[in-house]
Length: 74
Image (cartoon, rainbow, N blue to C red; front, side, top):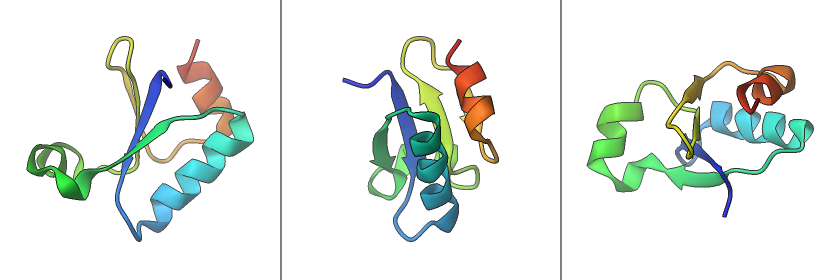
């Protein structure tokens, strides 16, 4: 199980870019489509993509690059 979650939604070009950044950083995350959960839409609807650490709940909002992701994981 990954220690990261990437919140996004289908057809979100920024979410696709965020996934590419994670790939560049060599990091994997569980992708959660917020469209299926009203609570997640309310929380993240205007902020996606958002990368969240499972261990403490810290979040990294878009825009981010590979270096920022690596620092976020330290």
